[in-house]
Each structure stands twice: as C-alpha cells, then as structure tokens.
Amino acid sequence: MVKWGNVASTAFDAFEKANSTVAFYMFIIEESIQTVSMAVYLSNKAGNTEKMKELAQWNKTELVEPLKDFCDGAGYVGFPMNLAFKKFAEASEKAMDYYISLVEEKPPAPTTGSIYIGSSPRDAVIYLDGEDTGTLTPQLISDLSPGEHTILLKKEGYNDYEATETITAGETLEKYYIMEKIPVTTGNIHIKSSPSEAEIFIDGHDTEKLTPEVITDLSPGEHTILLKKEGYNDYEATETITAGETLEKYYIMEEKAPTTGNIYIKSDPTGARIFIDGEDTGKLTPETIKDLSLGEHEIKLTLPGYVDYVTTETTVPGETLERLYVLEKE
Image (tube, rainbow, N blue to C red):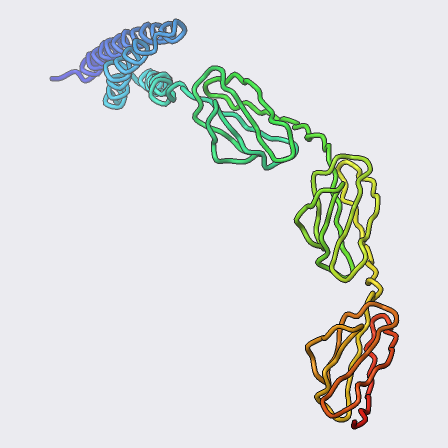
C-alpha cells in the first residue's frame, strides 16, 4: 500500500532541489549581466564607444534576453525569485538599450559654421573672402569652413567696412557692424527762372544746361550765377553753397528794352519806291520797314508821273508807326 505521506515528502524534496537549481542558475546569469554591464560602463567612460556598443549588444542578446525568457518559463519553479530576476533583467535591458542608443543616435560632428551679419544702416552688400554673396544685411551666411574669413560691407554714401572673423564648426557667430557715412564735401544749387530755358553759367563757365536745372558737386563757398536768354537782359547773382545741401533759387529775368522801331508806309497811289535816309530799300508801298534805329529818319517815295514825296518820321522803341502818304501828279 502506497504511503502518501512519504510520496508527498519525496515530491516536496524534489521541488526544493529544483528551486535551488533554478535559483542558482538565475544568480549566475545575474552576476554575469552585472559584470558585463560594468564593462559597458567603463568603456563608455573611457570614450571607447565601439567597444561599449559591442558589449552592450552582447549582454542584451546573450544574457539579459535569455534570463527574461527563463524567468517567464520557470513558472512556479523558483517562485518568487523568478519574478525578482525578471525585474532585474528588464532593468538591465533598458540600461543596455540606453548605451546602444548613445552610439546610434549621436550625430556626426559638424564641419562648418555660420555667421549672422547685421549693419547700420541695413541693406549693405556683403562680400565674403572677396566674393560678392549677392545678399544684403541683415543676413545669415551658412556652411563656412572653420577658421578666419574676411567680411566686407559696401553701401553707397558710406565707407566700406572690413573685418576678419573666426568661424567655429557647429556655431553661429553674430556680428553687428556700424558703417561710417562718407563726409559730404560739395553742395548743389537748383536754378529756376522766368522765363525758363535760360543758359546757365557758373563762375564764368558755360554749364551747357538750361533752367530749370540742378547744378551738383559745387565746392562750398561763393559762386557766381549768370543766366542768358535772347531778348532778355543777363541775370547775374552771387550765391553761397553749403556742403551737403541744395540751394533753391528762382530768378526773374527782365526783357530787354527795344532799341529799334518800325514804320508801316502806305501811299496813294500804291507802288511807290521807298527810300530811307537816302538809301533805296528795294521795297514798294505798302510795306513795313523794320528795325530802324531810334530817332528821326528821312522818308522819300518816288513813283513815275508823280512828284517825289519827302518827309521826316521819328521811330518809337518797340512800336510800328503807320503812315499814309498822298502823292501829287506832276
């Protein structure tokens, strides 16, 4: 007859031995994992990333993952130690994944740098190492090799600004340059006149320009302005030019006083030849004789079959006298 008490006792002893064997195996694996993990840590501290990655990967696949699988399959054998060892294996797996990621996710070291260039005033043309970048300030210039680079800024009305800057790989250098304005050494004058289109002379020199016109680049100080236009008296003035400024001037020219007069001569009958001051004009009545000097002039008309007609007339400046002379038959 089977003695169940003895069977139970024997089974329990076997279970205890199995538990001890399982626990011993898990302990050995745990110690191995910790030893390799320490080697991983020390390799990382020494900067030997390739060795660190190799050890971490081996530790994970050859020790940590088999321990996890063993703990899952042990069931009640080794309980509750298998649960503790499984937690240890999971923590170790995360640690190894971390060390592996340090190598896999580390970006390559940068090989170029950048410079951000600002200026006052803005919109200056940027030259880098003598080459026109085609850009204006403010601007970020990227992909520059490490080391010294020459920066040159150009803007109309300002002195060029040049600087040497050192570029560091992986960094952006920020620079703000203040440009100096070129001192203005000349001034201008805007000349208008009534009437317009008068010739402009400056200091006796013909500018070959007509009013209205801006005459530029004049030295500071006094300058003589002379305007000329046919039919008008010359207009002369002295003006003071100031550097960096434009002087506005409006001149009114006077029309020249007439120096001659005209006379419109008619006769009855018509067709009489006209003599002025004894000279034959080659003209017949009716006719206007123009541009006679001011003062008295002798008028003589001749026509065949008629008595010569002689008289004296006084010309008026700018006016035309009208006269009708009646000739007598011989």
